[in-house]
Structure formats: C-alpha cells, structure tokens
Length: 109
Ligand code: SF4
Ligand code: SF4
Picture (cartoon, rainbow, N blue to C red):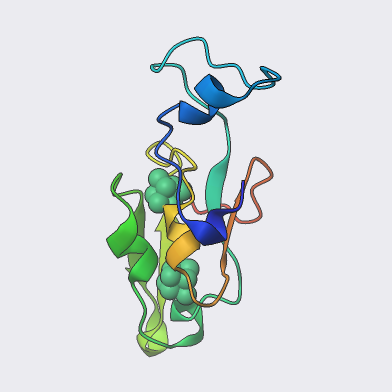
C-alpha cells in the first residue's frame, strides 16, 4: 500500500481483480486489517506550525488536537475510531503520519 497516493476506502475492488487470488476478504463487514495511524515527531503542529490537514481529512473523526503550552497542538489518534485507511498520511506534507500495527506513540484518547 502506497498511502502517499491516497487513502484506501476498503472497497475490495483489488480483491476482485487480483488474478493470483493473493488477497482475501471474507466479507465487506470484516475489518480489513489492524493497522492504525501514528503521528511522528516531524509533525508541523507538534513543532509550533499551524496545521490541521490530517484531522480535516479524517472521515472517522479519529484525530483531535490537544492544545499544549506555547501554542503547539498535539494530534491525538483515537485508535478505536481509526481504521488505518491512510487518508491522513496522504495529505500530510511533513510525512509525519505512519500507518502500521507497531504503534510508535501512545496517543489513544
Ligand atoms: S497533517 Fe501532518 S503535519 Fe499536519 S498536523 Fe497532521 S501529522 Fe502534523
Ligand atoms: S488512518 Fe485513521 S486517523 Fe488516518 S484518516 Fe484513516 S481513520 Fe482517520
């Protein structure tokens, strides 16, 4: 998955067209994977630059911003809401979003 090109809406079209049948999804209701978003230290907002692009792009409302002293705001991922779609990664100019099942920062709200 190359989320720099856009997020995944889990439509399952890739499963349907993959001729080697390398992909499997039992049903559209099945959770596609356990990957979630994490915010890395290069985040603009964490470094005092106003940015809310990831939060604005998240349809699941899984990103909120926690105000810090000094005008900084920390993006906080609600991992109960996050489905790992990668849309937030695709809009982040600072390449500060990671999608993985190896969470680098405990941001659970
Ligand atoms: S889009 Fe990137 S730089 Fe902006 S707040 Fe989100 S993680 Fe930080
Ligand atoms: S990966 Fe998670 S936080 Fe990012 S846009 Fe998708 S649901 Fe929202």
